[in-house]
Image (cartoon, rainbow, N blue to C red; front, side):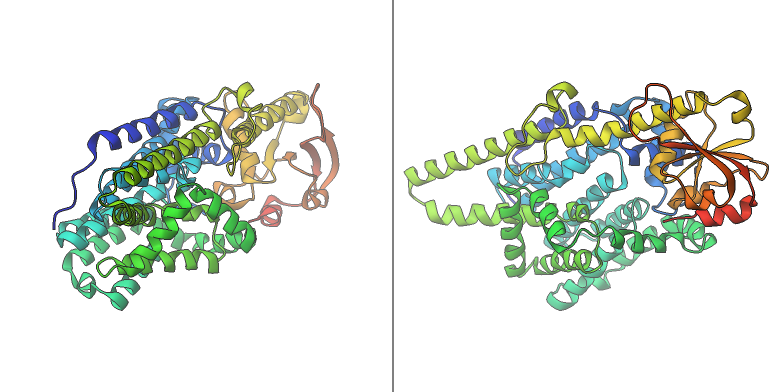
Length: 490
């Protein structure tokens, strides 16, 4: 049975509107610390792999910064396009599931106004990976209807892109396999095209696996890092619920999961969604991982609600008009709330805007986007306040990778030497030279350095307020080979 027609004009309007909002927001307000880190990693330390992620996003960020240094719109364009594509694909998934016009529109709008667009403000692994998962959901739904095995080969190529972005997509495929074995179609797992696609994914990720093997499988340590940041069940649920969107997204999400589990044809995908969410919770994963899962259940929920409404209003003109009016008002209210909370406003305006109900205010984005720039300029001033003698044989060492990224990103144009850090991926970027005699430490005073140097003084540049962010250590008493291992942190 062929699916309904694509709601071309309404879907185009929603997709273009989302693209416009994302582009406008991408101009503001500065570089997030992850973005600066990705730029530095890909630009200054290109590699086949990194401690904390595969190479795609760092290499992409480094290339875009080299192409248009300092241009936020260009740097964030892949994330902007990802959110736009997810919006369109969500509507197309609803169409594959049998949804007509407004079901496609509601699915697209609900996903666009969810956590997907919140993380899509930045170029990061967590803004691109939801795109690959959404494409996979679309391909699997379409394959279930058409049995066109070429879709499975394409799914392998998309899986390769996902593996080069994050290492999470195997969880999806394991969940899909369990769902197919339990509910059918079991023939999915015997298709040569599926295994051909798997081979494509494996071959694509070999260089990254080679890098990991040569660095003691560094990424395996990230599990402990993520678990240590677990906000607790209540905190996770809060982000997941609010991230879905309480007015439209969450109701569609819940309705969609129920609808998928009740469906004979697509039950295996409903099982997969439940298993993936359970795995994220049980392994204490980050709440924003859920953004990768939203598209399918929200699309299924939009279709389920449309069918329920059609049965309720069949042959009743007044009820149909009232239902349509209410649906339109809900959509408009949600869109207004989303735009109100988006980082599209000038900084001075956004700082004064009150928060929309059940949404984080745009001022929160300002805090994240400007903190790194302020730190970078403070470090530049601190370094410049040192005498020429103090700068000799001196290395800038940061307590954490965001601090180091701030120095490397903003300090490069100001003539500062590169930064070092023993934190996470920066540890693998190398340590100071053996003859380095002094350290400008960025962060709170270090007990490790206190024991390895004879003198420490706070460095507060003229006009700076608050506690000093830099400490000057002189009189080194330990070799760097020993000291560097002591500074290593995760």
